[in-house]
Length: 313
Image 1 (tube, one colour):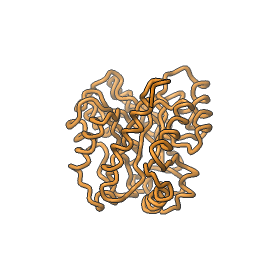
Image 2 (cartoon, helix red, strand yellow):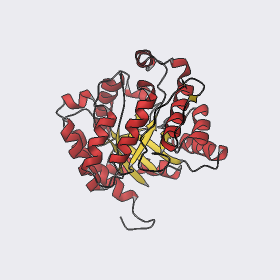
Image 3 (cartoon, one colour):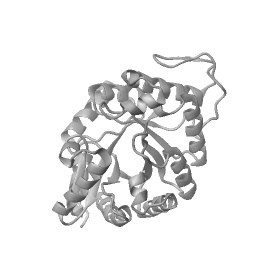
Image 4 (cartoon, one colour):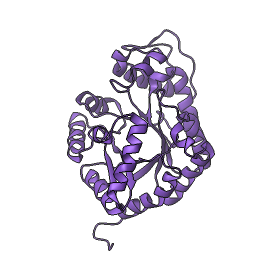
């Protein structure tokens, strides 16, 4: 099992004492502690450091970690220009880019799509068209493109990524339609179901639908604290500040865990048993310096889960 870290790049975290340079230093420290990947989120509704810009800096400052988006919302950007940007980040990172993508959420993303000029009702077809277009630009020199939503009678010559075929593209989502699309079109699966049983069921559906290799990953919000009650209060503050919704509601949608290291590790283990191979950890706190303090604790979780079966503890 591999582990990733989501960088706290939102305005709220920066206002709590963070800086963009500190984010890059945090990525270097995470690499030193054994994290396999570093991720950045995307939003127009919540201010944050633009993810592809941040990941370019992280790629230059690190040596071997994967750098990825969790998740990028392609609807926010011109598809052709984004293909060029992603290829450029892949080149700068020497082939270490992974692109997590999503199509937004009903009741939350409509205004973002309106601002970007994309019809929210066709968001899934738009996303699939964009991904298909990216791959065509990365692997050939298409003269035109006509999908379900996107239509271009002329396309420019595109820069080629570091890897043949371009970076892997992971889909965030766990609806039945998302599972089918993951199986047929995408290289990885990046959901956050709160029940490991639902994760196992979704992964089984993907594998039954296609024999393609799909990386099974998980987005998990975590906060290590020996006092679980205190940890829940921290996660509550985070949910309210980030989503303007109570933790009780968010935890029915997203995988979350708090408690001592052993409890966090046990939760990770349950998802591993359900089939997850890459766990992306987000520290659920807006407290100044929280991620820096949590990092060595999460590293203990990583070290414990990497021990061979039957090893002494």
